Length: 144
Image (spheres, rainbow, N blue to C red):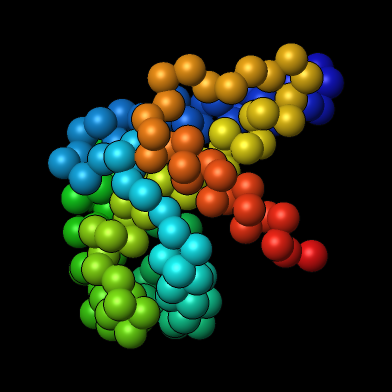
């Protein structure tokens, strides 16, 4: 199977599997607007999180398949004081970080899929999702 089609199918599968997590939560990433400033804060938080030591007994490859909503993801983040502190230093709550991460993932997947041969703009995108795609597109263009 050509690589472009494989990537497109993988992207669609990822979006489809996360759609149920988005729908299950009260915080809906499909209606969350990303901003360049928020993405900067998220990047800074992610850099801090990568520096945190692994919890004793943790392999670093925890099973997140049981996270079914933004609230579930936020609860998992909140369970670790060092994670909460890192997010707070960037002015983020765990719920905002989880919602924004899923919104950014969705926008990134849309950008990846649109490069596939014969790809068409996703119908049914919310105005926020379309805006998020444009924010992510502009961010990519501004990077080397």
